[in-house]
Picture 1 (cartoon, helix red, strand yellow):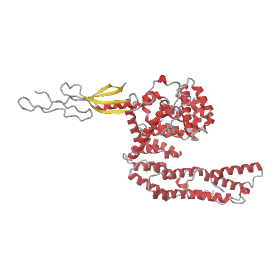
Picture 2 (cartoon, rainbow, N blue to C red; picture 1 turned 90 degrees about the vertical axis):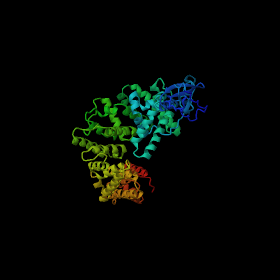
Picture 3 (cartoon, helix red, strand yellow; picture 1 turned 120 degrees about the horizontal axis):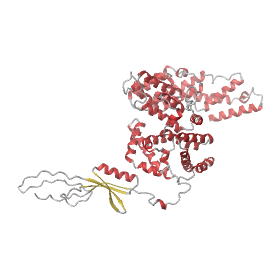
Picture 4 (cartoon, rainbow, N blue to C red; picture 1 turned 180 degrees about the horizontal axis):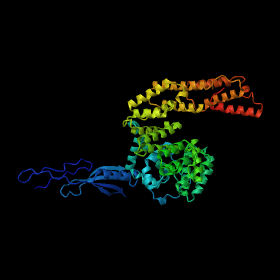
Length: 612
């Protein structure tokens, strides 16, 4: 048999010629095709000016993946993958480059040549604010498995370059986690694409924050004490420097809290700080630290008390997120007095809105339990349904939970399992949840939030029709919200419904006409409550009436619309009356008390933004 013809000397980037050729035997018969020689893929990196083989793979994707990992981790500046045929003694098949990448590695000097880091690290500009509540929740969701496996917090990774580099080596796993997180947070294809890009930007911003961190000092107490001492002097700094000081304070707090040992001790120490220092920057640092602790540990179970009844624990988490007592009877949650004091401080801080990120994480834990497989499934179907009812009734009491998209989706999906509802029948599930809520005003709030989650045309058609039907059937707030509550609380709930309808991606005409119905209902309720009635002949009653009128105009309860404009007109009409000052203090003989009443009303009126 004659030798096969050799390949021409072509470039490495040119396509391969056929690996087998038909050759003729001496008697002229055609020989069968020979089997293709086995190819391997060499991953090479350029080291000291020469290409060196790092690993050899049988599959091309594995070799390219290894090269990409080293490029992302900045182990090598130049990498490539070659397709070769080492077990080919006969054929002259030349290697071919199938992948090549080049990058620039900054700070390539050895660590010993860097010297001592500066006292104040350089400023860094984040493309995304990693200290915002939603961004921190995204990071905790994204790296939950990794942090649990290695016993880390997101704060640990964010403030330690070594830990961040170790995390970023798992580029393929990070990509999968980003896709899963984006898919969980967005329901449409376009939103998923945008959310995926946002999460990628958040991950890329982590390196900028990490590079700006100083080397941890030996004395963590002194570092934190120094940061706390200069808190009052930071308000006048430029925005970029203020953001830098914010990172340094969070870093100092983490270093100090880690010395406390157990998670419970860290929790108690952090809450004692915000009780001593009422500063927004410290509140933010404690908020993010507690958020990471809640997400990566059993801290929430310690706070709410261990209970075999998972439904009761969910209700306690929901009450805690809104700053309420954990139980109706107000019993102490634990037997540890020091821990009870810290929990009381936590409730007050959550109620006053000082810990927004922690509130997000507490609600996220409720959502995770609701959406997990059989976590809440009871043996008896009726018991199971009653458990969901208790959770939903708690959400109705703390109506802001009905504005949380994740909670609304989670509680709706649970009722897909109901005996009378077919699987994935969202319309039936939404109708069932609305019936449990009972109060039509809260039903509007729930359905307006649900409308934004799915692009199901049948579901959206039902929600739009039901919202209009409820408002057209009765615009009496006492019927929309029949529970016993104050005027302010009832108006606040309808304001939440108004804002939720305004954010619905429905047609502008439908939104405009529906919002006008809500606005009309709020104005009729205000008129019936007597706040806008003619001033009473009793001086004390008239004074209370004018104060209530000013409070409604300034408390951000009413949306911009006809109701608020009517109230402003009534208020200005009374304030511009020539004898208004005399009417305000006619029954107050003490000049000091009279002056205090004038000053109090001036403050109320100034908050309205109106001018006489």
